[in-house]
Amino acid sequence: MSDINIRVRGKAGRITLTRGKALNALSYDMCMQIDAALRQWADDDTVQLIVIDAEGDKAFCAGGDIAELYDTGTAGDYAYGRKFWRDEYRLNAYIFEYPKPVVSFLQGFTMGGGVGIGCHGTHRVVGDSSQVSMPEVGIGLIPDVGGTLMLALAPGRLGEYLGTTAARMKAGDAIYAGFADFYIPESFWPVLISNLEKDGDAGLLSIASQKPPEGTLEAMQADIDRCFAGETLGDVMTVLKADGSEFAEKALKTLGRNSPLSMACTIELLHRLRGTGLGIRKALEGEYRFTYRSMDKGDFLEGIRAQIIDKDRQPKWQYAQQDIPATAVSQMLMPLSRDALVFEEE
Image (cartoon, rainbow, N blue to C red):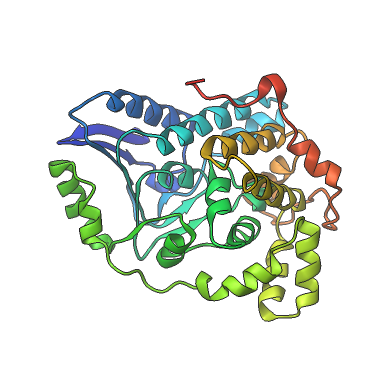
């Protein structure tokens, strides 16, 4: 059975992820199939909108399929991972810039690569099971697939908090943070998708939308802004250690599990993005600088080993004392010269 089901139904281009047993983890081949379909439909006047959903109730997409990245990386082959990220990021930008409405239905886990597929469209639907997050710092990466753009645009210092703690967002929080647009109970989704196929009108979502259950992030905003406003990870850690609040203690415990280098680079990327030229391409280009170097100079392979392969949950991070030299961050985020991420249209 294929990992993805692509077809046209009525006035809708339909993309359904069908790897339910693997939490719809996104493979390179799935990315390329999505890319090809979107490019074909962009010029097809019979397709008025795109609907992306997934089989199973546990996950829309729990991230990229990292097993092959680990296998090739540990064998010293970094080219496969670089190609995977390069072409995935091009797809993320294409979804963001797509000329037609893109509707996504995000049940269960929407994490990492799933955010890149599901959260850059024009109409993003969440329900009661939805849990959206950018958990990459826990495996030695940074929030990528354009995630740094959404984090940089989130209220206050919420981006720094979500990007370094990998906190999961239910429906209300996902909408508050800018990762989703509509809360619609999941029992309504099948009929709603059928109507989208029939009418080709994304305006149906506004009609079906309801007030989401109250989240937790808005109430935490003052604590987040107070503790995560520092210029560097070191600044954030200093404030958290001195704060003494229950919020700060919990945040410190969470940060202690993640890659210090990844967290430091996450904060730096968000600050750079908020400077000038905030946009999806700038976000992805910055992310690619890190992921390009993540296997040979970062903590990625060690993070995967500890979390996925050996499952000992005892990663041996670089800079385990969380004292990261500014030069280490700069080296991960330096321009890539001839290897820089470029977009097909350029």
